[in-house]
Amino acid sequence: MKRLNEVERDALAETFNIALGDAVAALADIVHEEVQMAVPEVEFLDTAQLVRRLSGAGEPGTGGAATLAAEGHSPMLCSIGQRFSGSGLEFRADAMLLFPALGCVGIVRRMLGHDAAADDQASELEQDALAEVGNIVINSCMTKLACIFEAELVGTLPRVRMGRADELLPRALAGSVALVMQIGMTLYGQRLEGAVLLLMDSPSLELTIRRTQIYFRLDAQSVPA
Amino acid sequence: MSIQGEIAVLVVDDSRVSRTLLIGLLRNRCQDLVIHEAADGSTAVTLAGQLRPKLVVLDVNMPGISGLDAAAQILQAQPGTRVAMLTANHQAATQRRAAEQGVAIFRKPISGEVADQILDLTGALA
Image 1 (tube, each protein chain N blue to C red):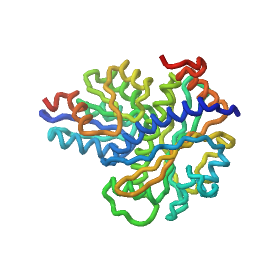
Image 2: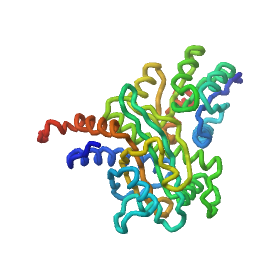
Image 3: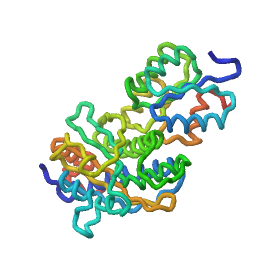
Image 4: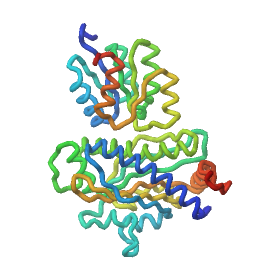
């Protein structure tokens, strides 16, 4: 797999930081409340590292997505996922929005005006609401990526699943690399740690790097005018 | 069939929550609306043929045919219908396709301001 140099990594991180800003603004519109967001962290992990981190098995103090499973309430995660492919491009990726199950079900119940019962099983309507939240947040990110690609990225319908990290990550992309954007936010007075994942195989990652180089003119190593 | 003075509207989205939000905002703004719902594009095309709504609001990504394909079929059968797309997918390609069909496109999540703009397509707020 091609390794990213520092400039490429920074360019990709900045791209997704901007995209995530749009996504969080969309989230604030959905919940009708200001979403206080910590500075997102963007990092690249292979899928094995990602499962360890999401399962809370990372080294203490490493931060990152490990905090999703370290909330102390439930090891279950809620995933809203969509698969994207490029129209006329060799690109495919699984985009996932991940939250601790209890936290995100609680927020959806607040949104819908339901009783915040202390369980993490979402009703059909609550799953519908979760799917729509994921659809809006994920599409905000993918719209930015499509802009960089100057192409259309076609997505499947959002799918909501609850489970442990190793159950949720798509087996079809085993061996792929994950671009992880961790988001920490305060919503309805509750602290919620979440993450947006973009899982790509090697050709898709290399295409993303190439397109990022072109978009940011990194190949020219230009000095800003 | 629409009764005189009433405005028939068809709201099409596979998300029940999104349909409910949009319908609530539309009802708050105009008492003369008769609102029908569909959860996919094929049902929307069938209902549009039967109900002849003045306004159809469609999501883009839905099971079966897309909202844009449904919009094309509805407009071919009833060219006078006002059509709006309401979608999270606001990529340039989607916007271009909507423009080619002459339909308005709005970005999710729905807000009161967007609901006003959608109703403006019918002249209901005039």
